[in-house]
Image (cartoon, rainbow, N blue to C red; front, side):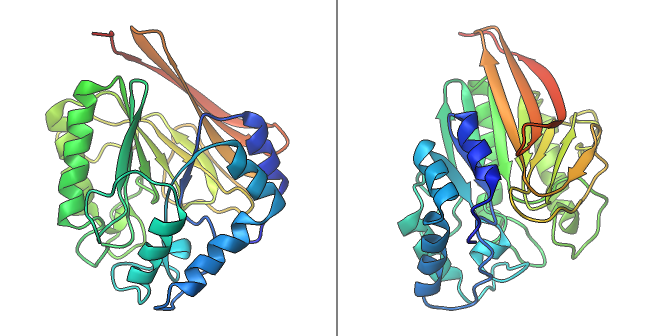
Length: 289
């Protein structure tokens, strides 16, 4: 949580419109029921020179994962659930939470792009990843936004791609809920969805070949994993059509160009020294009204 790695200087140099942080902003692994340790963890990361300079240079849209929400693999039963939410809501700039006192999912619009951020931790149990209320909210947001926006970006803190493995700490551990979301996407004919995912310490891109879990098939969507900033590398889930590149000092860039008729999206995985590890481009036809 006290990182001052060169990757933060590289992020600042990108001059992004905003920074999308999908969890594990720090590795406090806090189990306290008091808010103090959670506030202290945010204070430590926000006072590191490289991180502080970056966060001053660009807005941030952020949802937690396990290490910055509670202990490793934490879910709804984390002892500090309420304290963590209080510290998050007080410290982190955010859009309105649909469920006051509940999960920290939120959504916002930039241009013709709708960004949907889910909380995959504070409602997770053995039987659900999101909880019934957030699941219904997510499906409604994706379906409705796909019809009113040129592009929908789902910010998801957990690996989506991988064979069903009940009990695992990813969407593979909740295959029925994953299939329900995928079937809703297929039934609505959503063709303008991009997922940006976290947790795995890698850069990885899938073109939609491996991301479809609908019962009808044919409704995959691009997925970008963008990590691990300054953490050691690892690979989770897969396969990924464009490959997976584990390692520290890495990040992802999403570039959206909208000419009113076609939205061109370029996904790039980069290293702190400017090396491009992988890139992928796709287009969405979306005529302006």
